[in-house]
Length: 323
Image 1 (cartoon, rainbow, N blue to C red):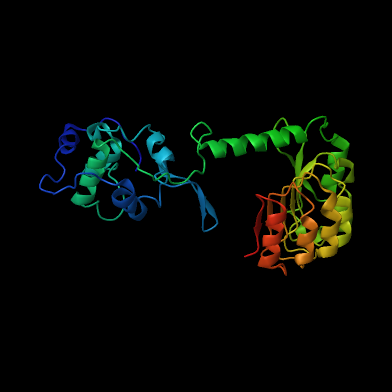
Image 2: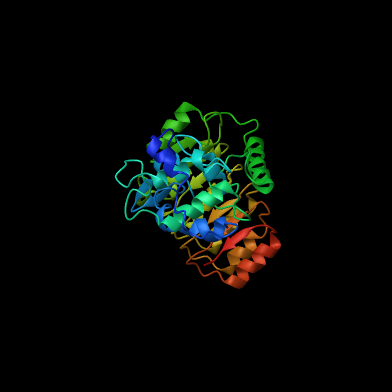
């Protein structure tokens, strides 16, 4: 429901005459009365960016209705709700426009019922109270985020700031050499000397020899994606020499417990993806020694839920996903 501004005098009159004969309860609950309507008629177009049939789908007009903070923020045309003033709230205005008006919402299907529109109007006039409902925090501005989320973001930023201390950017000749080996290299930010490396344009041809070509930039590699490549356990001895490695993706490779053993010395590793590998609970016993770990993914492996719980107990706060 994209926000709109000034409308015709016809609309202005309608704003105050929505279903006068309806019996409306004393107080409207956003979560019980309004949210179900949004879910049924609005969220398909107005929720956080997501992938649909392989394509990115952005919220229409930049407006999201899947979170309290987003509703109050509004969209490309500004705020859509002015608490206690439904007559000045475009969220209500677009509902009472004639069905053939280009700005009428929802644009497809039947208009909302008079009862539904009346509830939206009453909710706004009562102060647009969301109660305990918060909705999605995805994309929430830091200044609006819960304290815990802000703290996590600050910890994340501090971690990488410390990680890049005294690191020089990758030399151009080194960069050309690793790119010639098939690696794609990108800095973590425009100012960071740390890099992310993957072989996504040629996963099947990426083997131990090509990964070994990364050695000259070992100090710079923070994220390494070797998923679906032809690597073996042997190359992880080289990967273990990347002192600033924070994220390592080994999904759907031939890696086993033997290879994981080489990773124990990685002191900054936070995320490890072992999905679709041959690792067992023996690897989880080894990973318990890496106290920096925060996330370990083990779908379709031989690791057990009991092993995952044991690892979580060894590293409080770590998320270990088996299924």
